[in-house]
Image 1 (cartoon, helix red, strand yellow):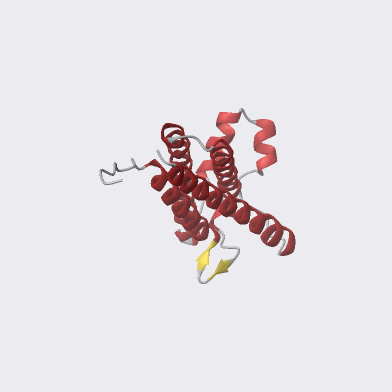
Image 2 (image 1 turned 90 degrees about the vertical axis):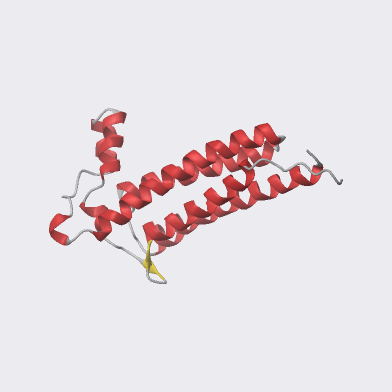
Length: 172
């Protein structure tokens, strides 16, 4: 692998890292602190996925491995991105339910983590609740889960680009 491929990987990892940091900063600084919107359990799970992806992009950017190592980071990122896509599809589905089919609001995240085993708490969080069905804010007609889904699709495309096998050039 030549140096231009390594720098291309590094640039894509930096782009992914900056995208994750920007999304988290927007969610925390603008939506949560400025507008006072409290994240629901599925929003918090999505944020954790973005943090995990940011860590993956950061490690890959700092390590800047050759093709095999880059594929490892990319595969990890693909799995995290697909998990985030699944979470947001569930969230979008909850928001599309008619009012009479929305599940009842459950206990808060802190209560779940303090009073239930971790596996059971995550199961309850991922099932969503009535508060997850509420559309709190939109931009260009897209709800927050729809915007976050676009972010995960973008991050998935970066990871897939890095995972693809480099074609051998016979003319260089």
